[in-house]
Length: 148
Image (cartoon, rainbow, N blue to C red; front, side, top):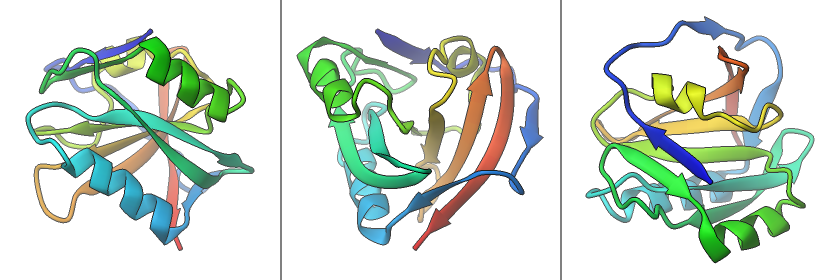
């Protein structure tokens, strides 16, 4: 089960943009954004599968909380998406409807996949602002995001 609820506190985010990058082919990036924009009444979420930091598949997963400030992935759709990722997602993505694309304190506390890249798209403005992070044991480092 994955849950995220936004907190009013802002975490300490270290800039690690010069190190590893997540590479999105344009089609996968647009597919992720299309999914995130498809319902602006709740946060949308899903998994990213691929190899060597390159996204090959965008796997939408329903937000079982149906909340504008929280998400949870569980159930058969989540299990199927994990299988498609060989149980190790390259990345986990979700939207922030009215907050910047920075992990909330809850996002950080509930980050249970240390090898995954956490992608957050803020839908506050158009086009959406999208950023990527590594979150390991409470430490947050921004990584580069490349769209080809």
